[in-house]
Image (tube, rainbow, N blue to C red; front, side, top):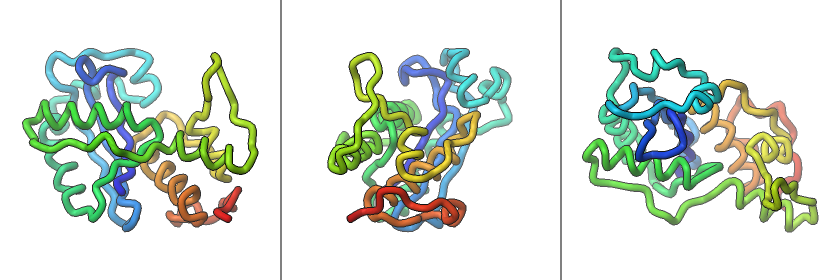
Length: 197
């Protein structure tokens, strides 16, 4: 599986642009990818979005950075080497839609399938199976990534959000939920909560 995380200039892949992609091949975690690009010409910037990921407006438009097409070609080369091309993400519809739109915008004839693994759903299932109360907000399930990390015995993801960090924290979380084991050396010191029975 390919555990990925993106940072973008906003929430709508038709109006906003990817700025960075981080990814790890879950079965071979030594294979990592990280790349940044400038936003595509005409993309919009949401101030709240870049406040979360730490990019400045100048960095979003920096002509010295790769173009979106170059970033997507590099990412395509990375995951073409992966055995299992199933996408696994915390908020999978957001990342998948941005990545697929960026492939199309870059004239790369490939896209991730709708059949994906969603960390949010897997954590919900695991907690429910164990009889653990799921937090709710506005009459909906509210399992944030930081909440899932705490549930699994991991620290919160550092701020601002960086796609390479997001991919690492999510890959570690997937490993703990799926296999009950540590995946990456930087998380060895954190005991596994709720190991697989």
